[in-house]
Image 1 (tube, one colour):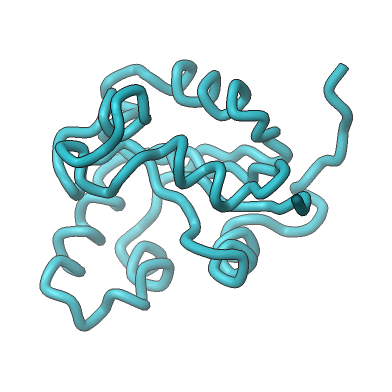
Image 2 (cartoon, rainbow, N blue to C red):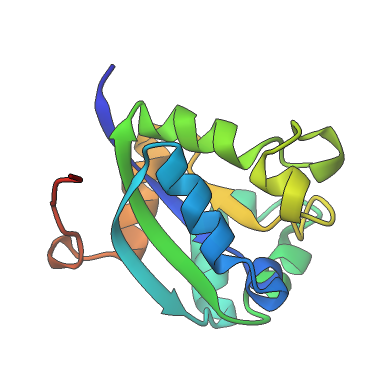
Length: 144
């Protein structure tokens, strides 16, 4: 397996529920090491730019409004098979279809308010990480 980086976002709904610590704990339990963390509040223009791939979809405006509705936490995670491992940890997009014990099952309310975001592949991960982080924002360290 390859060491991979992926982007994770703790969405406004999860922050409002007060489950930041629980989500980060699940990341670490999955051997996904946070190597960059930022809290920020997206404005509409930045949310539109991040989700531009969905611009033509019916849910785009609602997604942008939701992601700009409150603070988010963005994390660059690193681990063996990081993208796939984070996607399993998150669970299915729809919390009703997510596996028991997954973040979206435990903390999501619906398809939009589903607590977390994750890159869907290595190329997307690279784009998304670069969208939020400069190289000097990421820190290599070893777990002991």
